[in-house]
Amino acid sequence: PALLGLTALAAYLLGSVPFGIVMARLFGLGDLRKIGSGNIGATNVLRTGNKLAAFLTLVLDAGKGGIAVLVARATLGEDAAQVAGFAAFLGHCYPVFLGFRGGKGVATFLGTLLALAWPVGLAACATWAAVAAVTRISSLSALVAAALSPVWAFLLGRGDAVLLLVLLAVLILLRHEANIRRLVAGTEPRIGRKS
Ligand code: G3P
Image 1 (cartoon, protein in one colour):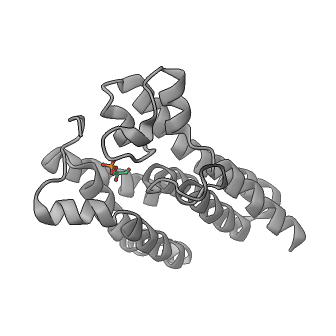
Image 2 (tube, helix red, strand yellow):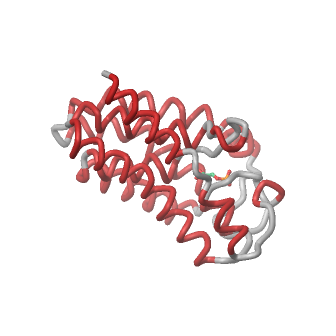
Image 3 (tube, protein in one colour):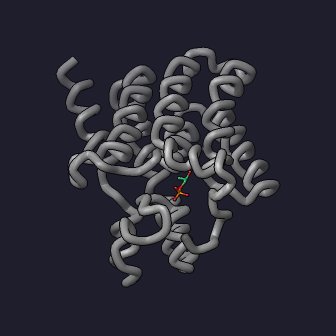
C-alpha cells in the first residue's frame, strides 16, 4: 500500500506538469491563461496559431498519463496502473503547481486510456476525431469521446476499466462547464479559431 501511495503521488506530480503553459513559454506565445478560453490544453495553444506547440502539448499531456500507467503496470501491476492513470489525470485537472487550477483532462485521459487498454483508447481517439471532423468543436468532441468510453470498454471486453472511465467522464464533464454553456448558447469556437 505504501508503494502504491508513492506511485499515485508520483503520477499526480507528473500529471501536474502543465505542458501547455511550458510550451507557450518556450515558443514565446505568452501566458496561455490570458489567451482564448484561458485553458492550459492543446486546443487553446492552437489558438495562438502555433501548430507545433499545440501538437507537442497534446503529445506531452497525453504522454504523462501514458507513462504513469506504463511505469505503474511494470512495477506494481494492473490495479496500480489504473490508480496511476487516475492520479495523473487528477494532476492535470487540479495541479499543485498552479494552485489546483488546471486543465480539462482530455489529452491526459486519452493518453491514459491508450496505455491502459489501447483498443479502447483508439476507439476514444476515433470518436474524438469523428466528432471533430463533423463539428470542428474540440470540447464537444471530448465530451462525446469521454461519455462513450465506458461503452467502448464494455463492448471491447474491458469491463474492468468501465468504473474508472465513468469516473473520468464525469470529471471531464464537470471540467467543461463553461464549454457546455457556450455550446448551448451556440458560441463555442471552432478548432483553430482565435477566442
Ligand atoms: O481539451 C480541452 C477542450 O475540450 C476544450 O478546450 O480551450 O476550447 O476550452 P477549450
